[in-house]
Amino acid sequence: MSGAPLGAGRHLLSVADLGAEGIEEVLRVADAFVEVGRRPIPKVPALRGRTVVTLFAEESTRTRLSFETAARRLSADVMSCPMAGSSVKKGESLRDTVETVNAMGVDAFVVRHPSAGAPAQVAQWVDAAVVNAGDGWHEHPTQALLDCYTIRQVLAERAGTDPASAGTAGFRGLKVAVVGDVRHSRVARSLVWALGALGARTTVVAPGSLVPTSFDDWPLEAVTHDLDAVLGDVDVCYLLRLQLERGAGAYLPSVREYTSAYGLTARRAALLGEGAVVMHPGPMNRGVEIADDVAELPASTVLRQVRNGVAVRMAVLFLLLGSGGAVEDPAAGGAGD
Ligand code: NCD
Image (tube, helix red, strand yellow):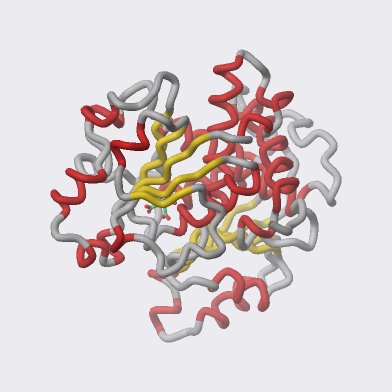
């Protein structure tokens, strides 16, 4: 995979924009922001005077709040443009809305849109940095980055090492199962590419009706329908949400059938090897892809993923806007304003 570290004048539209080196850099910078998050006042002045706009044309709670929290912790000014209630409803095109907001003086647009490619379009219209916060079934790069950060953190804790000094060596040969509705999942695409760049061995576990038409450019070890057969041999079991609002239900005999074959029930969770972790990007369909009590197990990293999401998004915004290409000490400067 080609790609390059983030820096001034760049966008984050796809994990492929980063390559292994770019992913490693984001994880390294995120370490500093995890430390900031533990301070009594978890704020630094790194982006003071910069303006970040969240432009969300799709429902979202965690991703929008996570980006806005990240921007505020860097002392940026934040504007929120929820498209559902905006002038797009009055007939204005996405382009006119974006150009209008851009004219107010914006440094970064964080864009979520139901259409694949919309953030790349926005990047053509503005001189600001654009971050893809999820486009259709296509990509969700910051989710993949926070998932990789979480895996790296768990591996370091297990080895009793400092995550920063461990780098990403632990991903080489790591066995990951990505389970469920891969067809409709932007999370799966970005995650599988990121894991591939870092040398992990990823297996997709899904019903034949919920896989993409082609896996040609996906760095996969295997594709299987048999979840029970892989669980004993994975380090990470990554569950995807069944995307019923994207029509996943039409590809299945019933949701109950899906759960009986692909849901991580307590019986299946018991097949996982010692030390294996269970991940989910949220929001979870409890009782569908993950059983209620499995979501609460110590092996589940769901809330840790959310927590790390803020630090990872701080790293992305900082690298795009604050560092001028060179990372000195992003966490310097104490509380911002
Ligand atoms: C994901 C999304 O919206 O793509 N959620 C998220 O960003 N936290 C996954 C999902 O909705 O299943």
